Amino acid sequence: MVDISDYNELVKAVLAISVLLTIFKFIFEKYKTIPKKAEKQPRRKSYGSSPDDPIPKPTPLYITPEQVKTRDDRPWRPFRWPYHQTMSICKLNINHWLDMDKYYYDYIKEKERVLHSYGPDNFDSLPGSEEACLELMETVKEHMLLRYPLLFTSKDNGVHVKNELTGEVLDFSLPLKENPLVYVSKMAKEDFYIVLQGEDGVHRLVAAAVPFPGGSFGIKYKLGKTLDVIHTEVPYYKEKLKPSMEKWFAKMQPADLVERASWYISWDHKLLLNNVYALKEGDKVETDIQPTQFNVRVERQTLRRLPKSRAIIFTNHPVFYSIEEMKDEPLVPSLIRKIIYEAPEGICKYKNFESFRDHILPYLNELVDRQIDLGLITAETPVKTLSTYPFALFIKESDDTKGWSNPKYPGNYSGEFKKEIETADVLEKETYARTAKMGDIIFAA
Ligand code: HEM
Image (tube, rainbow, N blue to C red; front, side, top):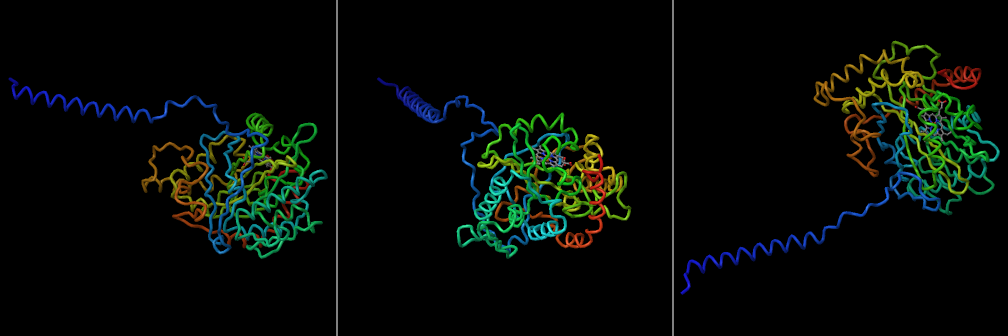
């Protein structure tokens, strides 16, 4: 006789075992689909593509001339702490090689003025650079047509290109009517440096369309010089930069595009010559300049190699951010304050921080205290490079199509810029005369 309670126990046990088996089977099946630990892949180098790797092409961005009028470029905040002199290069997305923002028109017009007033002081090329200059011109044209199809248009496959922002039609038919550097300067708001490696293996600046050097150096004195000579005045170049730059240039291929940013501070928005570099050595900022007038000038730079001529193209694009517009970005005032007082001495001198730092210190102190009061930082928050370096925290809040207007303090210095340019002439001429006598930089380091 079967005891009914034993029978029930048996059924329960069988059921429990089958449930357990189902669970094991499920886990086993699932485990089978998890890939085994990947075999060790060789680490992808951040640079050093092969010479045959394709050069990436830009993707079209369908912004209109009207949209450009209010568009802001990626918001640069290249403040580093600790601040060591390093290459600080990042991979460049080709779409950002030549950027577009609301200052485009002003910058192109200012290029025309500088070309007209100073010509070969800022735009010049040496014999032997012709092929590279033409290749650069073609590369810039192709980039603009592909990346900004509504801003640069052509009905005859690029023989004539209309710049829809300035209204000018550029005639590329041969023989060219002007130097290729002029064409380049009518399309892009960037400054261009063309560098070729000589038979002796040394890199030299062979052509330059540099209307916006800012004033710390005169570009005409750099032409024909090696990268070492060009960087003579740059603090810690020999010890910190030269070895890594040489390694980089030895390996750099056309598919390796990088960008970096330098910065300094001035109390104006001029592109050719900023007030901070127009000061005579040892002079200080005038006491009646309001601290709220101070701006960070970011020198946004890119590097790429052209495939045919093998020329290295170095671009520089200045853009100003007022300290005032960055005042609610956690740590930005603290970083600026720290850097202008505690950066390595050579850097403080090169950027002429001494000429204004005591003048803006009370203002920066106020901004730091304000951030503490608002709870953006605490007195103990360590002052260090932003997590979104080299960009502002709000880089995450926008994209290519919308642009990156500052959500809290959208600014536009176009009006001030135009007024400053109107009165720039006298100061420029005086300073240029002084530069010519000194043979090179304006502010002697
Ligand atoms: C990876 C490559 C490069 C790095 C890391 C680099 C770095 C620097 C740095 C740190 C400065 C000082 C600016 C500052 O700190 O605000 C500087 C200045 C300068 N760089 Fe470069 N640079 C590079 C490539 C080039 C190239 C290819 C050229 C083209 C000729 C160039 C031209 C200049 C000029 C004209 C200055 C101003 C020099 C002066 O004040 O007398 N740089 N560079």
